[in-house]
Length: 64
Ligand SMILES: [Zn+2]
Figure 1: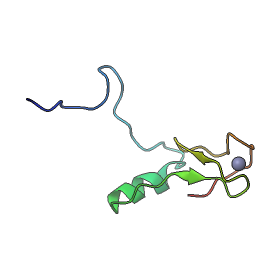
Figure 2 (figure 1 turned 30 degrees about the horizontal axis):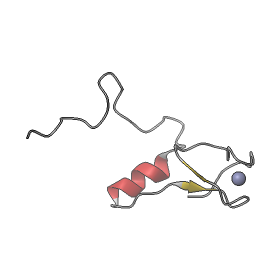
Figure 3 (figure 1 turned 60 degrees about the horizontal axis):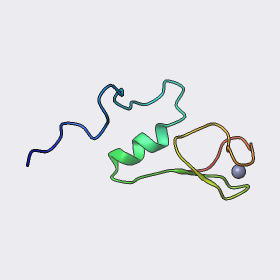
């Protein structure tokens, strides 16, 4: 059995850091061997991918 060259379906772009830095903690975590996702300090909702606001309660700057 051969391993696929990518886990992404054909045609999807390779994920890269966004230029605005919203996902920097995620990418820095991967370099350290840690998977980081956001969790809102206000409503405790988890979310991924990284965003500037919580999609559950609309508070700004969810924690990592
Ligand atoms: Zn929230």
